[in-house]
Amino acid sequence: MTKPPSSSSTPLHEPGSGAQASSMALHGSLPPAEAGFTPGDIARLERCFALAHLGQYTSRPNPAVGCVLVKDGHIVGEGFTQPPGQPHAEIMALRQAGAAARGATVYVSFEPCAHHGRTGPCSDALIAAGVARVVYAMEDPNPLVCGRGLARLREAGIEVAGPLCEDTARALNPGFIKRMTQGLPYVRCKIGMSLDGRTAMASGESQWITGSEARADVQQWRARSCAIVTGIGTVLADDPALNVRLPEFTGPPPLRVVADSHGRLPPTARLLTVPGAVLQAGLASAVQAPRTTAAHWEYRQLPPALNSIVSNSAAFNSIAPNSTASNSSIDSGIDLCALLHLLAQDYACNEVLVEAGPRLCGALLHAGLVDELLIYMAPTLLGHEARPLAWLPGLQTLAQALPLSFADVIMLGKDCRIRAFVANRPV
Image (cartoon, rainbow, N blue to C red; front, side):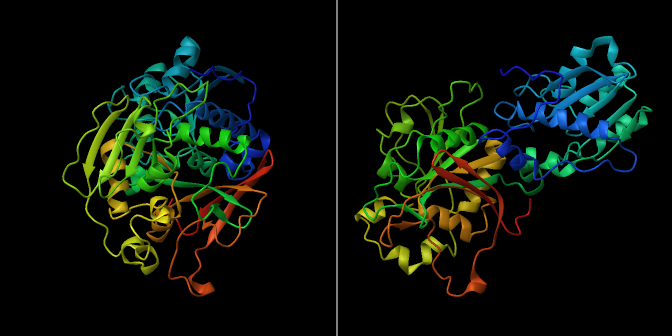
C-alpha cells in the first residue's frame, strides 16, 4: 500500500508528468472561498483530494475518498479509502486522531456512507467520535446513501457544510458516479496514432508508433481501470497481455474483456497466460474453454447488435473474412451497450479502458458509449493508406462531425498526449 503523504499540502497528480497533469484531475484550479467557507476549508479539501488519489488503484469498486480531521487549526488525523472490505477514509482518519476527534472538524471528499455493506456506516462512526462539523465536497450518488449520511449527521446535531469544490470531487470518481446514476461504466478509448491520425500501417504493423514514455503512461491508466476491453481482431493481430506492468501496483488486476462474437479466441493467447480474470463475450451460447490458462477465464453470451455501425456498414462488410484487414479489426457483432451494462452490473466496473482497433473504437463512438479519448500522438506521418483512428462511415458533412472538448495536452518524451471529452456526455 502506498504511504499517505505528509500533513503538508500535497499536489494531486494523475498519470502524466507531475504538475502538468494535476490540472487534468482537478478540471481547473480550486474555486475562491464561497459564502460560509474559508480559504482554509478549501485547502483542507484539497488535501482530501490528494489523499483520495492515493486510493485510485486500490479502492475500486468503491469510490476513492480522502478525509482530514482538524482541531485547533492542526491536522489530527487523515486517511483514504482502503481496498474493499477494509476501512473507509473516515475510519482511517478517526483511528489516527483517537481522542482528538472529539470536537474536530471533518473534511471529506465524498459524503460519509449511511448503509451497512462490507463495513459499517461512516456517518455513525463520526457521530460516535463526537466530531463537531463536517465539510463535504459532494453527495454520494449511490441510491443507498444519496444524502442519508448527511441527514444522519445533522440529526445528531453535527454542523454539516457543503458541497464545496464539487467539480474537483466529481473528477476523482467519474466511473463510480456514472455506474450509480446510469448503470454504465465510464469509458475511455486509448489510441496511439501518428500526426496524421493513423493508428497502423495498411499491413497492420503498429508496434511501436509511440515511445516508451507514452507506453509507461498507459500503464497508469490501466492500473486505475476496472476492466480493459479489446476486440478479437486486436488479439489475433497483436497478441497483447493487457496486464498492468507497474512495480508499485498492488491493486486487483483489471478484468480483461475480449469482444469475440464468433468465439475465435485462441487458447494460446498471451492474455490467458497472465494471472487475472479474462472475460470472453460473444454471440454463441457456449464456447470451448481453454484447456490450460493462468488466468481465470469466463464466457458470457450477449445479444447481437441492432442497427450497429459495424453490422450495417458496407465499408466494414466489404472486408473479406480472411483478409489481413479483417484480422486487425473487431468482429463486433455483439451489443456493445449490453456488454457495458454487464460490466457495470455484474462486475461492478467503474472505469473501462478500451484498447482496440479502429472498428471497435468507431462502433463505441457511433453508439454514444465513449466518455473520453486518451490519444497518444507521435511526431511521424504514416500516409493515407494507413489505418485511421476510428471507422466512422456515414459522416458526410461538417454538421455530422462528432464534437469533442479538450481536457489537457501534455508532452511525454517525444510524444504528445491529448485527453478529450466527448461532447454532451452525461457525466
